[in-house]
Structure formats: C-alpha cells, structure tokens
Image (cartoon, rainbow, N blue to C red; front, top):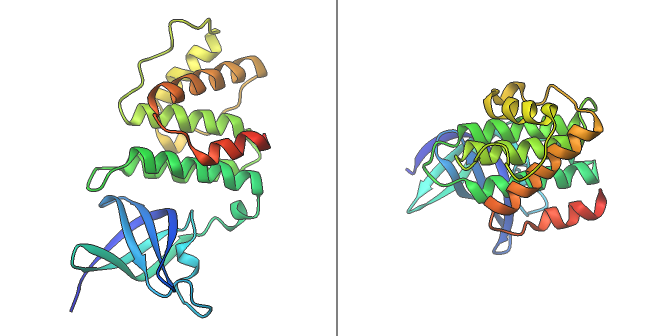
Length: 216
C-alpha cells in the first residue's frame, strides 16, 4: 500500500505527461511547492480532469510512490471558474501564479504566499479595486514576504499618500490588503514602485506578463 498525505494547496501550473496524464505544480500549506502526477487527467472520461486546472484550490490527497507524488483524491474548495471566464483577469491570475512559482520552494513555509495568491485572485474578481492596483500590491507584497523589500525608493519623488500606502502594504495582514483604492496620482506612483522593484528583484521574464501588458 502506498503512503498517503493530505495537503491544502492551489495549482500553479500544469503540463501534459505521456498520453493521458498531467503533472501539476502545487503551492501547499504543508510542503511548500511540490509537483504531483494526475493520472488519466486527459482522458475524455477522466474524473480528475478539472483538478488539473490552474487556480484549483482544495485539499489534495496524495500518494507517494518512490520519490514522486500522485493525486489520489481531491476535495475542491474553489475552482475560480469566474476568473477563467475573464480573459484579462485570467492572465492576471496566471501571472500571480508565475511569481509564486518563481519564489516558492519545496519544504519551505509558504503559507503567506499561498494566502496572498488566494486573496489576490479574489480581489481580481471584485469590482471594488482596480486590477492594476491588485497587481502592484501582489508584486510588492511578494517581494516583502520573501525578505527583499528595501523600503520606499530614495531615488523617486513620492507623495505622502504613496509613502503611507507602501507602509500599509508592508505591515498589513494579507487578508486586509485589498481593502482600499487610490486616486490616480498615488496609484500611478505605487504601480511605478512595484514595476521598479519587480525588475530589480525578480530575475525572470514572465510570459504571462508580456501577454498581460498587451491587453491592458
């Protein structure tokens, strides 16, 4: 009998393996970022087809065979179906997943990144906060969570509202991050700071960002 473990997590990406399987990358509370096989996911009648989709969040029961995981069962909590129906919103979400994949590692404590990712996807679905602000908050908080945030840039002239906003993002719990909006001037400054720090600290070109920037 194989050993089983249960993890709570979200699918960051998937890739086809062989004729019928998928391999998914999961960001989990318990194990950090891990990969798992979803057997038969690409069969027309495969019962696990839906759980291979990016953004799927739930409790995954995995069995261990050798040095790899495979999905035995999944209790899905949220598919984020509405996000998948929104072309631009979906690319925001995919971009956030790419950043999480970039930063997160196996067996690290990635609980904050998982919470940030989940709340950011919820914020994209909300009409109460603009998507470019959600993106800037996600980029900045990701850098902060990973200990790379150097404080407000000294080589940029920033207004008091922007400086307060940066401090708020730094000090506020993830659950309360997406509860404000900004006037255009402050919003533009926060976006510029996020862009500056993304280029400085994230040494990767994100494919989803390239597509996203053609849409916005």
